[in-house]
Image 1 (cartoon, rainbow, N blue to C red):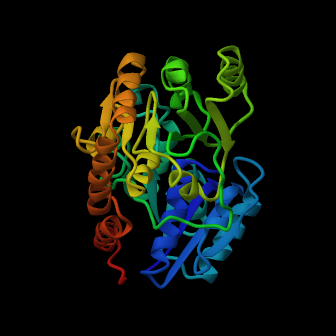
Image 2 (image 1 turned 45 degrees about the vertical axis):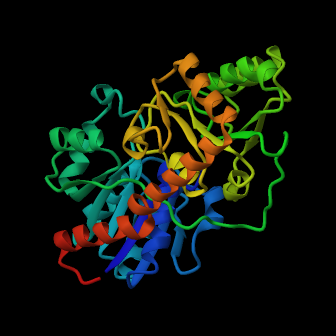
Image 3 (image 1 turned 30 degrees about the horizontal axis):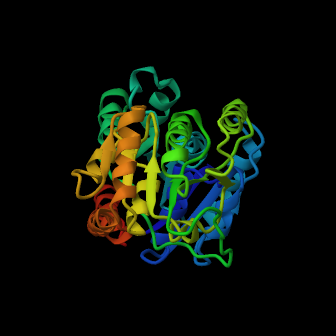
Length: 362
């Protein structure tokens, strides 16, 4: 089987990381694995395995016939069987199929605002779905939405998975007191609700002055980012909260932290929680998306209601006050992640499903 992943950019986001994860993982299992970025490259470019065939289309506009035919030539030359189109890149895949009907399209839905799917725009997807062979949804709500809203009967839920941590030569040195660090890995977007973390840090600055918060994720330099930075300055939290932006080696940061948090207002299945578990960190996260399926009891982590400051802060305080509880919780979550969300577990089911749709050999 010969499969290529398509994604609009290689910036550090959940859908983008999963496109890279699938390309890298499949390179070890099938005869050809490729990855195509349509509009923009980014920090994840360096994480593509050397065995993966890579193409950057440099797409300039919504309908860019030059990039469509360039992709068509690449598909024909490399005898691609399946395009796995992530998120909005399905549009490019459909345009290629109109010029090359034998190609098969799997659409991978990573939509992160699964708490309010009623307002999701679906006209383009509805039309595009006539050309989909199958749909992969990253949570059960998205699966039900696809079944009820789109014109493709082959819909399946596959959770996100994590590949073995990518290690670059970039070794990070975190600020703050060693052994007293709390990490959040989330791009600076409103749905990630960093304000809840800032408010928690403000409650802790006198009670736990040695503990600090370390935030990793893309800073879009927008109003949300400006408001966060102003709030931190106004509350005099510059020595409590540290921003690092994106990194190619978040593993290095996770190894230096004691607690992982996620304060999101909405999610699909966040890779951050899986990464925390992989690194044996205890987790406090909000009850959105599939988080409560990953963390199903208090031995695996602490799940709180979205935007509940008192509950969020109280749970972090429990972990700060009890190192043994932290260690045990991190170990329990690690076991669950390895058993249910590892690359090998998900890829086995994925390949079987794809084979059932295409009848291609592996």
